[in-house]
Length: 383
Image (tube, rainbow, N blue to C red; front, top):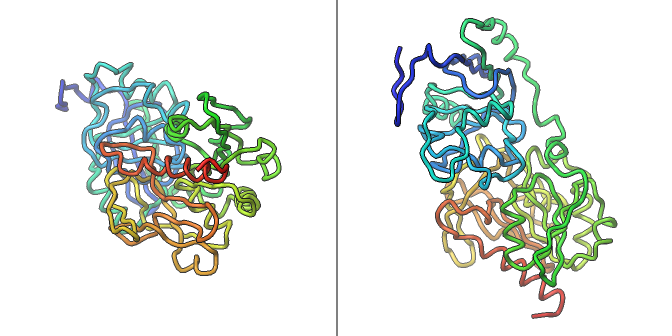
């Protein structure tokens, strides 16, 4: 059988790997394998972005998850390490419709399948991602098993179906601890203002955005308590994005609660938005299939202006729970009306659920970094 590809073709005989995906509801799908010969488990989620697969694969927020791309052609511009959001891929596995094995781009350093094989990440292609996406939208995210194997070394599919009934819950793991730094480090841009970033699985572009605003950044592990953070004498605090259930981050929530008692400006992004809400008495809940993509519309409730945002989260803040917390909702998702932004009514504390550092085309929400800098300067008496 010959499989046609944009930019070339190959036969299944020439592709020595096969793959199978089994979902917890008993769905079993066979496909062509690429990347590492390996079996993994995780929560199967989808991302609707048309570009940015390198950034998505290296986003620490995907730890514990098997990522599926809804865009049908992946790998066509290869892999460039300058686009990494961390030191390597953080997904458990990868699901795509069609893999480009002959990429063409001046920044390409290697093929996607070569890179994932080197990094130990299994992938499956030649599957109906549209069908799988519709299934997840209707039934919600579910756990799955992805196994890549050599042709002729077929696994016991019935055994995999039985195993799919008892797939471990990735949210029982300390996912933040798996991706966050173990020791603090400092990034100095030569600025006159120092801030501390609590690393829950931070993307490199968030740190770059802070540096671009003239803020020196000290990145600390999520295990640091308020006293250790205050020892750095920061002018402001940033709580980063990251993977997992925010309610399993009790120590970080306690730290933020203590920091909120100071007058320091605090800025949260994605998971940081949820952790700040919990720290001040709010609540969070799991979304049916999450928000993962590059074109999610969010509306500022004050100005009624709509922003196009990049998102990657499976949990959200409960608006009703914020009633007596001192926090108010500032932005909502136009699609489902979920909370996308919060701000404290009296303190310089604010956060957003989306990623203002991401720029899939528009730079609609980058201004939030400047807003944080203004809050810091105001606290320092420089404004």
